[in-house]
Length: 221
Image (cartoon, rainbow, N blue to C red; front, side, top):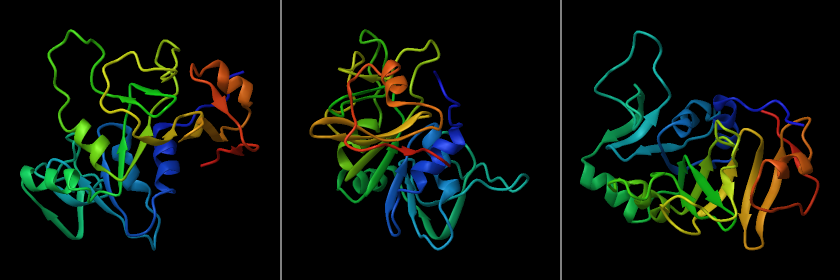
């Protein structure tokens, strides 16, 4: 049985709830860019984009877009009070210098030991990993947001990644449209599952073995 999957916005909202007050966070391309729209009132989080923004705010209201102020997905964003622009060099100094608390990143594949593949599907193609590897190894914590399976139903959570790696053994938590899964020393630990889905159901659409240390919580957003 496949239960109702979370929307992209719901996945981003669930991830946002785990970001602590005062954190410095980089948002990657795709679904991660939505996380900034779901930081609750009373929580101050500074979002960084490697294209040179420190202090990314939520999406602007219609008609208030500034096309000189965009995120890494080239989507209009806002700047929070106290935010700033920096050049590309300084942006990567923040990342490589270990000043980013959380990197929220998309993935093509994640392995059972936290290997990340998110930039290339054909090893014969011309390399172009960009800043993904810097974010994967430079941030203190790497959280992945991705759909649980591909459009053809293949699991993105693999025993071993078959695509070229961005970084090895870096992912700490995975947020999918079906579950929240921690990457621990013993393997992939299921923490939450969407309503109407069992652990057995989840395992059927997950290539890597799953571990259940306690009854998973219901993934409600």
